[in-house]
Image 1 (cartoon, rainbow over the protein chains, first blue to last red):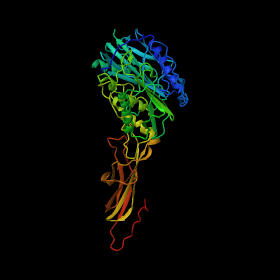
Image 2 (image 1 turned 60 degrees about the horizontal axis):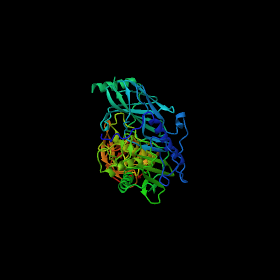
Image 3 (image 1 turned 30 degrees about the horizontal axis):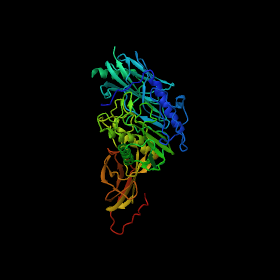
Image 4 (image 1 turned 180 degrees about the vertical axis):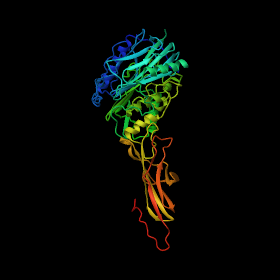
Length: 197
Length: 337
């Protein structure tokens, strides 16, 4: 893997809010049904609150989700994800690729610059905000290398609440969580974990 | 290694409720579909026209999508008056970390955005291979654009095994890979992309192979020109083969396959001959000189290159009477089918 890494960093504590804000802005633009190009959407710097993506267009209608079967079915955007069971660190996951209500984004395997710490073999959970329980999920661990994330070393699938176990090997690990919330809505979140005693 | 196995064992024990991976399944579906075989025209955004190399990569991806869909899914075409817009530049609604993104609202429209080359994320710098001399670590724009075209057609991100071993089953993936990772420059839809396109839009033609990411039942039938003949008479057998799946994959004629005529042999069946493709879609025929009463059936064996199941027809019994010295009664073709 030779993914480019580093550059400017964003505060780990602030990142989840920024991500959610930008995703909300993205989906707000989706809600306007705006076609791109005629009035390109504006987006604020990552360190600031995102501007709404107002791209009015007479043509398209906003994507209409199917009727909600559960409370989580009404989520307008991918929820934030926070890792529990860690010793220290930001805990907030970085949102990568997602598909949600007729829109979506493609991102690489992300190794966030800021690490959380966890004990070897620690039981970890992921809480979503707003509260939601995935229909199913897959968690994968890859070692962090100089070039980003290495090959996937292990993983596990599950349904309902996310429950995973930290690697037994100490070191720097990248955790990817791919979760599906039904109706074609999926999100992928990433954490960097320093595993050690 | 043993520690890793131990970890995996611990995970399995800790997660008694863990469910099997859904990999090797067709890609998830994203909402409504466009009309079958519709031509979706796109144009460049006036305020965000891609550089030439990027344009070429996106056009190439369009061709890749059109050529590898193997389904009656829409095709894409560039037209300066197209109602769907493709944008390249800095103002993309792709969230913080998206290289590219899309919006779709069938049957009306779609939009597609590509982040500008050189964009600095907090985890790295975006390099499109086509715009940067293709160094290691770059992203193949043609591959990413094919991924976006797949989304527009209704494909969600493919569910991979936990160990990621099936990553190449799909181009429409949960994360984009950089050069030189396997699959980073895949330029045809993967088998599980195609599977969903076939489920949602139907196979392209009766000769189109069903994706090996599917497991579609089939239905074979067999009829004979006559079921009561004299020894040495010629009997023409006609078989049909159709898909027996659900939705778009039900009752589709299947042409160009290998259908075998079998006859009962002791307690089993033995191949007699391979039937020829007939003019009608999904039809096969063979003629046979029969000399003794015998049971026959048509057999379609699951081929290794197609995601369909084996099936055989009901038995057709041919009764042969002894040769007659005088004028023989004529069988009436089709009367006993």
